Length: 349
Image 1 (cartoon, rainbow, N blue to C red):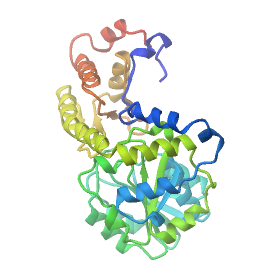
Image 2: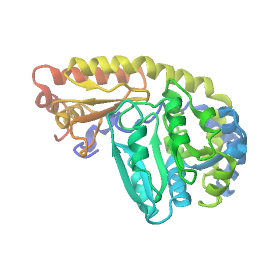
Image 3: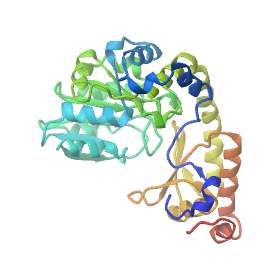
Image 4: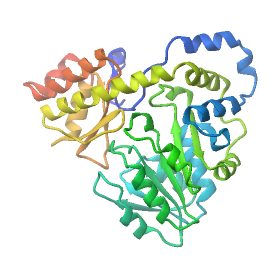
């Protein structure tokens, strides 16, 4: 949030982190009903794993609760990528994929590809006897695109038997196709899921590794015995038991607004990528200028220095936020642009 003065903080809309809709007040009532004992005791993750397994329609033995999706990714690399082994992944990708592979002392093998279809042949060409993990995101972050179940299964079937297929599905609820059931039949596959996006619980740090029992049993040994806090478990359980329809309603809202946001972006000269997530990834003639101009109006969006033509913008979480974002984008297309916006906001550009 650099460049934003403290006096303007209360007016900021943060559309840079892909966080979901805030959970309802009932979540806090859950904690009040449990009492202070929840802070004294170590949390038991089993009820949460059982509830999430029921949500996915699988056996609890196939689910491991983790400290957010990042913890699940980290465990996969520490468990299945030996030092000096290689991890192959399409790029651009979520930054924690290469970060966790490096921490496991692995070697990175990025595969450049034309966004849209899974680069099956290029991935397989990069796989060799030193490959330990192939990592794929679907829907993808930062591009927003998704691969089909058929593409994923084709890749899984073609990999050598000792290679693990990591499929990061943090944005799965927003996608048009659910590949969970199909990949649960693939022993080499481990899916990463989270309650940070569609469920709106990023601050609770609740994630999951999902896969064959044999893989999940290994991953249990690569983390501490109490990965989640009592409040995190209690609130996540409440959402799984009582908030599924509410979450699905929010997902439908995002889907309905996603294309409208893309239209607004096109209207000011941007080129949005097709998205199956809760964000829109768009190229601009001057993406950095767009990011700064939005910040000047109190709307934060994500700029990627390694992808300097692009900006990622979370779909606003309600109609009020959407109107603010739409006005901010419109201002950048009109007279005055960033300079005029900066005059109305106490923000450095």
